[in-house]
Length: 413
Image (cartoon, rainbow, N blue to C red; front, side):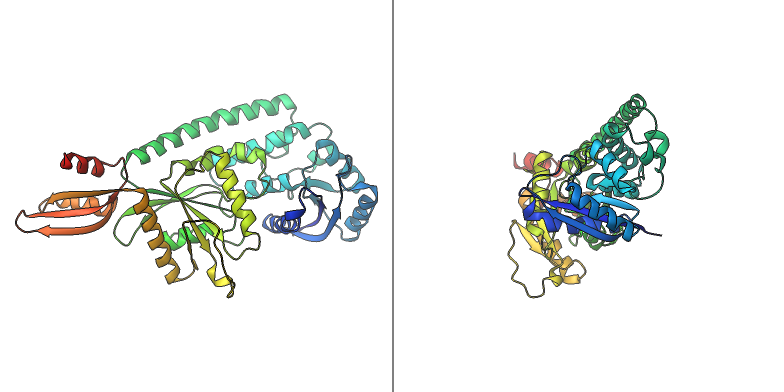
């Protein structure tokens, strides 16, 4: 049975530009967390009330509506201080959480790998640490319902010292995972294989593109944060070259600081890529804001200089609207169509040629193994047989640090 949820949002001068879009997203987040929104309270204020955010009058209305709709939970779009959360719970008689806790809860639902679960636990414990004192009522209810998944009540009922010990232990474990990931990334970079990362706002269609190109069966429901743990698959391009595709966690407005810190290693998986495909929902009314969110997070992660190709998806939903792209280079596709796959493949190929280095090699006809490797490890453009020399003249593009470029330079010398 779904939990009944009441939403609360306060519009101020600072957030007025994207307030309604943010509330719409909060509604979508609740659905993703398997809740049902039964009532929404919005208010315009110059400043937040320091005690309740919404003031006494609105708090009374909210209390009446919570009782009338038999709401199990109240979720504020703004972050609550420990004292505000406790006061609101006492006044309303139901659990009260904020947007950050809701997002953390969804991440707890989505985490599959050991690393993902550790990162969620770290983020939740870091957020809960200053909120532990005086949460007897809330903690006694942990273990069931939105905002309570993850570490569980036994961890959160321990004192601050034990929680700090647990946080330290998780960080040490994640450091080891990050080192292993870094070694794997270095091996990939030192090799000849070209690596492509999928990034973008949550629910933009990254998993759909992964499935389109690799014929995999990645979870691609219309939910926020459908993908959490990084997933890497091989994609064999029409010319024969085999590249890797990595799908990563979706970005979102106001991504909690705890999540950026905790998921650093997950997001850094994209740092070792040769090309990033920035997937954007072309039909989303908040497209420009979503683009800014992703670009600002890339900047925060020192990844703004990486090669990008913007992939605008859901062309079929534009309904004849005049679409004007804001990011370049780009392609516009319907990821559910055969034409979309062709347009995307051609665009990726052109972008790869801009990034990689050209080569020209003479390969003896009897050296079939080298020819085979060139077809799978490079973007082979021409394979011309020269009868007089009994060899192939092969031209194409390869990664700058690959063996083929080095061999090409040696031949030219």
